[in-house]
Amino acid sequence: MTITYKGTLHEKYVAKVSEPSDFEVELTLEWSETATDDALTHEPLAAPSFSISGSMHVTSAHQKPNASCTGTFSTRPGPYGNSPAGFLSEGLVSIGAVLPNNGKYVQSSGIERCALAPNEGLGVGGHGVPNPESVAASAPTESFPESQPVYTRTFSVPDSVHREPAPNGKEESENTLTLSATLTATTTVHTGPQGFHPPAPGGGGSTRRHPLRLGKTVRKAKKQAQRDLPEALKEAWAAHGLQALTALPGTPLLSIADELGQSAAALAGNDATTRVLDDLRIYNDPPLANIHVLAQPAPAKTPPLPSCTGRTGSQLAYCASLREAFAALLGADDAAAADDTALERTVSRASAAAAARNAGALRLQEGHAAGLEAALAGALAGKRHSASSVRTLLREAAPPWTMSLTQAASAIRWLKGRLSHSGVHVSILRRLAGGSLTPAKTDVLDLL
Image (cartoon, rainbow, N blue to C red; front, side):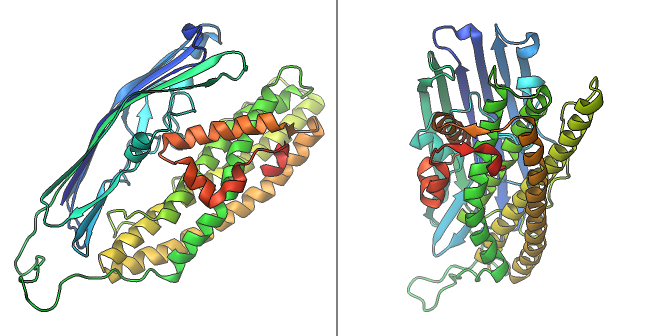
């Protein structure tokens, strides 16, 4: 079976409809991904192919001088771990793919606002244009009879426009999305000593094979992902709320807490959003190809926090302590996100191995999942310890750190927009963790 998913995504965000030159972002992403696998065993029959192109341009008339930028998109180096996949069961072929609109698969040549971190989603305004067709295109899953040699599904979103009040409450922002994509599967049934033998018409018996049962480790990982989802959601929107609090003019905050808090909150929000997406994928458990490959967590990165250069005396001591605490917290955040991503791929490969009735591959993925679960638990424990130190230091700088009901609602709206860019519909979040997206007056530090 050969599966191809390709298309073009175009987005444009204008911060103020009345004054487009104030801040405008426009991007075009073109992608093509192909995988050829055995539908029964999930073994690759050819090397997968993956290509990315496109660009991003930011225009800013009134912000800092280097806010305008341009970046060209290309494939991020390294193995592409999310090729289209499919399997045959009970006479149906099921296929799935993922729109590669994030930094796991795409890199940008740009800097500043045109840069793209490995754990960052690719979207122009953070608001998205929720729409059933665009949500379906983000992670399409289709089924069709095995007797059908070619299956094609086309997605088309022509100029979907979304408007909402700008952050200052006085203007209106606008996000426009245009998307065109095609998912195609071509199947060939082979007969012979090593092929699949369909039963003769009217004959007794069947070659249909039921999936193997997933082991305790993978079932536990799925339950744990559902338990972790509400916490990850709160952390993601709280990080955005922390950015808003430190950025408010006139707030009596030390410049040190302001400067470090802005950078750290942005990075923490990216990691928490990655955990949300991975938790949802673990819970939904779509099959993933390469069932004999073990997913390894991405290596830890040193968080790019502002330095304490130029400070002296008690300010230098406070800055060094806060910077060290933020670095430990972000390191644990990054490790947890990387472990969760590797676990998500492992659970999906275990599911594919079970569907293919490949007991050896299933045992391989189950054993690997156990190690990743332990690593994730350790990273989350380290995160809780580091968060306590950060809370103490920030409260020392400028208590209280309370978001109003309006600020909490704005942070939650921002998070929903980011998740919609990755194909997550709000109804899924409400069903699995609705209480975590209810705005309330909140001490943002309690959610770190």
